[in-house]
Image (cartoon, rainbow, N blue to C red; front, side, top):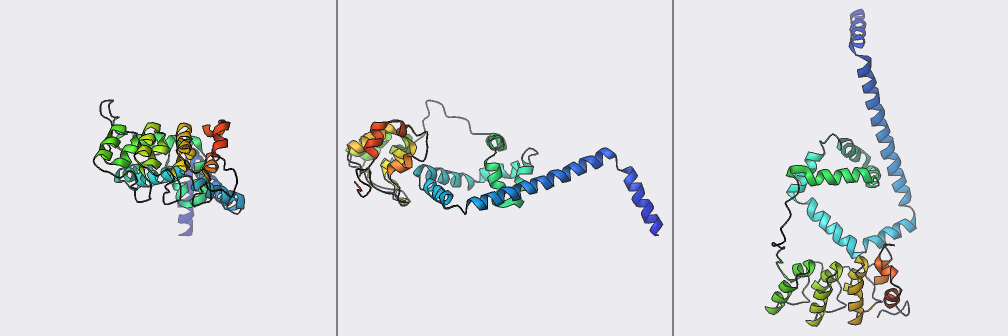
Length: 279
């Protein structure tokens, strides 16, 4: 019986082509290498998280209204059935399957590894746009997006819609679930004329959202030079701090390419005369 078993094993080994064995070994080697990379990336991430400077940097970045708005948009996108269908389809894509498999086993370390892989992110973005039938067809120039309310009009920069809503009695200081008002959105989007309209109609220049960000914080975070000048001219307090203790000038400094930082006069106007002054 033992001889028959050994014979069977010998036959199996003879029947396995050398090329197949080589492919199998390479596959195992890749899997082992991927696990090692994920473990190494995870260890590096955990080590960085022990650095108080890194933690403070992340905390500061998360306090930016620009980042908060992007995260909210991402959460809304991820909750949509269409997005979930696309992701399920992409997980089986030969070019991305290895990445998804590694992220399942490697956790945060694997996530950080691919987050820094620009080529892989570009591939994912392209395929995400093309999966499940591709992106929606663009609107024509004659079909602008409809503003469903004053806040939406502020986001889109639709002055006519904003004027219409104000004309029928809509409150320019009404906020959404996160206390963001029309002036917050218009300032962040850089719609100067709409900001002027809202201020003329009584919008509170220093109103704060749920994270204690003012419209000046929004304009600074997004690098809206003209809006910042307007808000300061209308009395915006440059020294007000948000929930993370950051002033507008601090948020502008998060991005070294922020155009505000290239304007010495504007930087001077945004800088409080004293660190103890809120106005």
